[in-house]
Every structure is written in structure tokens, then in C-alpha cells.
Image (spheres, helix red, strand yellow):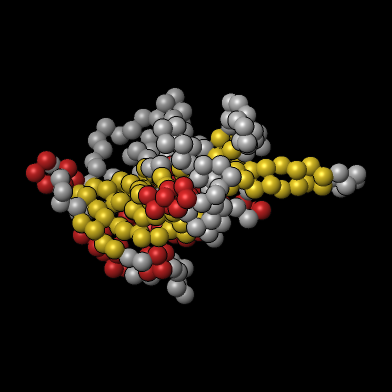
Length: 280
């Protein structure tokens, strides 16, 4: 049975997290190539924008990695087999849904037969190379347009035969700008869930994004972060540009103190967001 939502759903407002993603090490988010180009990488090629040929970070990759880390941090059961050895958490009942905040924030399968009460809270946009990084990479002598090719060698433990393999990466120090996460507030408890989203961003910085992370790739840092809001009243035409911004440095926004339940400046930020998005 398809998911049935309650008949009345109220969007009270949205919280926007915007900023940059800085590469500390090379980043590989892969795409299969249909053919081998001269000097190209037949396997482990990066995903590129078809119009500009520039690599980008899909919102689905960023969102999926954050969800995976959140499930592991929570200890949510990995009870659904997606094939190819991939297992994820799936809330099969309403009590399961309520137990783990990843379900309302990141969503649930459409085939469940219970009412979650509100739609998925989180939208994550694709993120593209900054203009400065595009210019710098165009000037650099990279192996491929905007990317490097990293060659690794695996050694057969019995015969000692070398098996070289190559992987395309966006070089370290490149910046992807215009990151945007859109968080919708449908219920009063959604303010608390937003807190967990910020904490998961910190967990991601300590982990990796994309492939080959255990071999050094994919370490990132969030930068130039801003938090802004748009209340329901702002979606009226005459008030559309009435949203407000609160600006914090990365350390101020994401750093944890002695109390793991509080982020630096957390109480002030939490109160500010609730003032901007009143639950009427």
C-alpha cells in the first residue's frame, strides 16, 4: 500500500543551510563511461555536468552519505537489503518511524502502509565547482579536464603480481560552492530534528564523501555556512523576500562542546529559528 498522508499538512516555514564544500583530499564520485576516450579513464571516472564537462557533487550523494552516517550514529537497524551487499534502515511500522529521526528527515519508502504524518523534511541540491576553482583547474596541468588521475596498484598476496588501476578525482583544495540544504518545518518537533542534521554535518567532516575514502579520498570541510529562514507568510508574493539570515563560522556552527547535546551557540540559534518560523 502506498503511504497515506494526513488530510491536513501545514508548512510553517523552511530553514536553509548554505555554504561551500572544500576538498581536503581528492574527491571521487563515480559515473560509468559508455566508451573509453583517448587518454581517458575507462573505469572509476568522475560524474560530470553534461553541459560544462565539470565535475559536480550530486545532492543524492551528499544526502545519502549523511543518512548512512546518521543511521550508524543512531544504531538504527539495517533491515532492508538493497542488493549488491548494500543494506539500509527502513521503518516498517509507525513505532519504528518515530524511534529514529532519520525517517522524518530523510524520508521513508513509498510502499509503507502507515501514516507518517508529514512529508520528508530535507531537500539537498547538487553542488557545482566555484568559479575560482574552475579558473584554477583550467590553468593547472591536470590529467583530465578539472581532474587528476590517481593510479594505485593491488598486489596478489600469493603470486605478488601487480594489478594497476586508475581512479579519476577532483584535486584537493578545490571548492564546490552554492551548497544548499532546504529543511521544511511541518510539526513543532521538527526544530529538534534540524539540530540532528547539523550534528550529522560534523560527523561527515570526520568521515568521507564519495568513493575510496578508506584509501585517502573524500575528506571535506564545510565553509562559509549561513542559516536562513523563510516563514509561511514570506511565501506571499508581497513578502517573498522577507526571510532572514544568521551567519556563523564553521567552528561556531558545528563545533561540539563538553555537552554532546549542544552545539556551540546552539541555544541562541535554536531560539532564533523558532522566532523566525512561528508555529501558529
